[in-house]
Length: 485
Image (cartoon, rainbow, N blue to C red):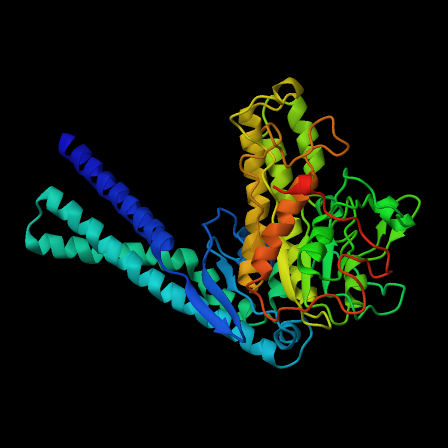
């Protein structure tokens, strides 16, 4: 009886060992198998597998600008495709190639993705087999099995691991290529942001404008002195006379048109009209299209899409700024913004003057070595959490710019944060706390000017109008010496 029980225990131990070897081999293979690069029409996509799921079916995974989003396509099986966009060419021709509902080139896109998926699993099967043999050999050596039994163990373990591996991924491995072959565009994978067609803006073309600035309250210069003769839209958007757009015009003798508006988001402000109570700002993108000879476009966007002000206020009254609820809220908003940001990049590629595009990242307003914000509930620990969220947004902005060949610039406010002796950020008693001061706006302008010096073509000074003037001809205020960073 004892012998029988001992044999049962031995068999259970070997079975458990086989299951463990299979789990480790497959896990390692999925972890280390290199993603297969697929390049087509200027686009580079990595094809691999997402982390296994317990559900029998579900979406795959799309890495867009560093954010992992569920694909619009659903796949059968526990292991589903992961697609990582590493390079995107968005010039006019390729933007139309990758637009939905185009007849011919898209077929090649899907076929290339399907081919990459097949190559990935060929590698995964080979790597899992190697891991199985390595682990089984280690078990045989530890058990001091004779050569013949070792060979039997290696063969049995290899067969068991590959049966589990192939069996577990069989459904996905065989059905995913057909699903991927029907992909016609990147948009088909990420889904479309709920953005309407951009309505035309009122007014005639402005061919003399050389630089267009689009964005939110940072670009609008909220909280700084107002223009001498503000328009109705200037007042509604809270634009100031001390913006980095004005500074750029004065530094380089350029004619810069600032379309930025406080509270602007991609759907409501950049690609769609923005209701402002007493007025409605037309879509900034539509107005930018009127600058038919603009050489540069500068975009500052994202904070209002993510509800940054609300997160700041919430952080002051909670014990922590990185709890699961607020983090989930932020990630959801960031994922939605990422899709909208991709749509914006696609449309920027279609601007009539084919300008060079610069994407401004956000500065860090905090100095965590200081404690001047403790009284309002923003401790250094909370500030570090908020900086982490801001870095996540900047990562999406920078990765998107890098992947599409644009310029990403992040102004450096180190030593000039809100609690520092000479801050570039408006304090809690300012008209717009956490927004740039006049010196902060100038620091952004200088960072942009330095980045733009490396871009061709270099545009000539303003034609027909004085430096620093608006398109309507009204002079903008001169930069004050106190604004030097």
